[in-house]
Image 1 (cartoon, helix red, strand yellow):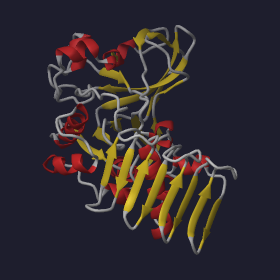
Image 2: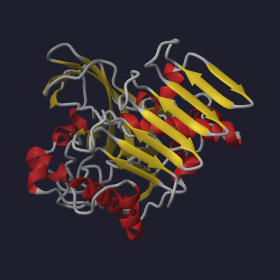
Image 3: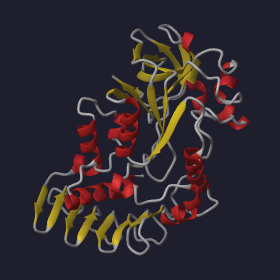
Length: 379
């Protein structure tokens, strides 16, 4: 959600300016100085809008001023000072563009065009605190299902027939140059940003606080979006399967902390990258399949939620690979594959067993990671 990204970028700037707290990007560089940041992480940093678009920054007695409007009305202006933060990206017309205020009464964002109910309205802070988001009448429906990367869940009939992730599962013996697979790497258009750690810690993330959470984000109970958020929290609270340690990271900092606590020094953090978005098509494995590390990894799966949440789990019975692929239309991809050498504790009705026609614990099962998932490999 672009507006939420804008708000969080402002909040991150305000936190750093006011409390000398490292930004999530700085935290990454401090903790993982020799580990390149994957594209999926770069795209959802809370400070990305300011870092990419700012042309001038002034810090003085009045706080921080950023202006990307090139001196013309209608640009983007950000002010962080004694009065808080003010952003206006409108085009000089009343009710147009984006308006953000962060001050004693919290953060307000309005992207409507002067019509009641239009656009997006976000409030952070103010009475009651927290964050509220309303996308008006333009919100797209969110489909709720169980992720195929939860190994203790059984697949539904609809998931087997309709889930695009079905094609991501394959057998390790089939991962060799010349092998072909029909795949559809999809990239979500909505990319909720990370919350800075300090803000993520102030927002509840538990089933018993669901009514409060939905209220903070202006999500109506019983809607698809509410069920999606409920399902994500439920999955995060579910017990781990035998041999795995799991954790849901609600900030980049907490994801780094969990991963380094389980793996020690990190060699690589990688995600699948596709040259361009294409329809479902046949891909051929090309030369250069690379195994990364040993059998101990942490894999983090992006969740459907109001802000960036990653379901991370550590396993010592996995093998990670970087697999070069070439599509029928010439599109190149570098796909991250994870192979599980022990599936005996998985649900027998898991999607992978039904698709591949094998039984738990018999053969290694592999799957490609979608573009918004990350595999962490230790040194």
